[in-house]
Image 1 (tube, rainbow, N blue to C red):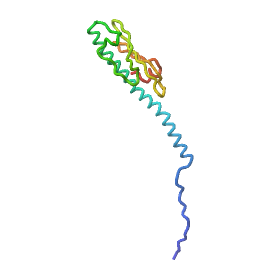
Image 2 (cartoon, rainbow, N blue to C red; image 1 turned 120 degrees about the vertical axis):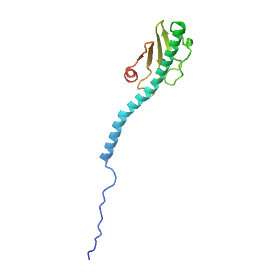
Image 3 (cartoon, rainbow, N blue to C red; image 1 turned 120 degrees about the horizontal axis):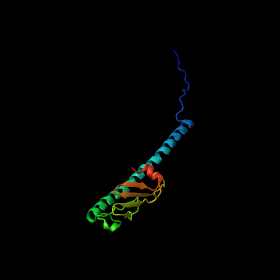
Length: 144
């Protein structure tokens, strides 16, 4: 009969090494550096939709005014509808100028936090529908 000898069985150590943990933290940091700016860009595009909705409202109201009076108006009170009060752009509504054959509506962005885009100005020239922005980030990221 063979007797079993009692030997300590070595088990592998459980856990992670410091290098493995550093690699994981580095990968998470790189992913966060890419994802966070993209997140703010998507959020700002959503806020920018408020301006485009306002311009759409102004365009329809200006076209109705043109049909009734044979000219565009520069007075906010002359239009039959107003832009809805929003959170991203000035509540006072658009300021615009008008000629007999065109009009310009302008909205100013309330400075967001973080200030990736800052307080930019969006201008819509109708009836052609030209949309411009005062900032290069806005122009490259937000305009259609």
